[in-house]
Image (cartoon, rainbow, N blue to C red):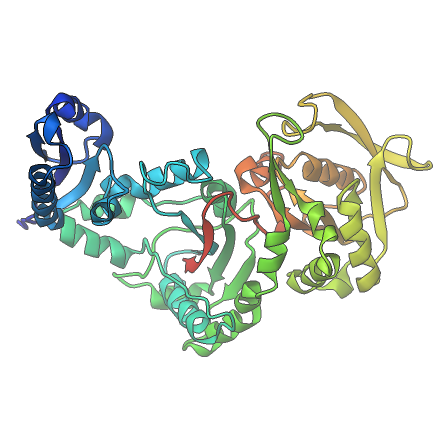
Length: 473
């Protein structure tokens, strides 16, 4: 039997005040900190009101700080009704609310974007990872090994000086956790986190970061040779109805192939040019109607060199081969600007999808529902059309649009292409900006378009806080 000893979880409550309000602060203590603790220690001293600001009051206050500082290393959180602006509160504020601090900081960032309550609630700025790679694949394909190799390559060869951080839920990590915490190892092995479309399932949970899937595959023989009683990973089974961002064949032993793959496919995704493009997508609140946060992707065109930069990234970031693309398709209105410029530079015909009455016959048509984030908020349907000769049956098509939000426009275009004889396996999607919080990929998957590869250049920066230079695997 293994016994794991842990220190009890302590919460410190600081309250230095005069007699008249001391009891009220103590009574409200348990409401402010939650219950992620074994017992609480409330430190309080009081003085008469007529001694406010006196030497006695200052000594009392310093005693509270000294005692709280001594207990701080043993505690999991600190609560005080009036943290700040006293400089002595800084060390306490850094430990405020324990493990709930990141969540509360994010909430404060959303509700108080101008930091009006800087003194009353001195929580840190929220930093978000700029890019998250999800490394997927069957057990035994080498996910941990590849992640380690790619993180090392990024940390040593990134021109922008970016840093990668690894977060693993491998079998080895589970063994270490079970040994440290006394958890049921067999249950950890049984309860695997699997999903057929991880980007679709998880991207909205980190909606200020770009999430990409790198799937690792190997031959059955290589997998069997590597997969022993302590296989390196668990989870990530075969994907049936989704398309990873990139796929790496890890059949070769050694680090050479993994390093070359990172330099060819992953390092270009860290290009410094993505960040200025991201900054060009501005946020406007309550536009076009109350409660909607509008991302002005067309703002890129207002910046000198913005369209040229966007066009360059659309061309270089495409995971396919432009020479094998028959048609670039675009649904009006905003995306036409980017699609037409791109079509000109790659010398590929442009198929326009427009509202009924704007194209000459013969055409094919589908109904399009209005998005819930549209200007009117209406769910009224309209008809969009495409010329019957715009693309040949079975041809290769790249859909280009300015933004992927709810996914209504994308799914409408995919339905129209399907009616024209273009299967999902022959379609790729390139969008300038993606708003994962609206779960557009989820809608496309629900409508059986999950196998369509979707690429986006940027996820607009958060309203508050800033993008961090870390990458999570």
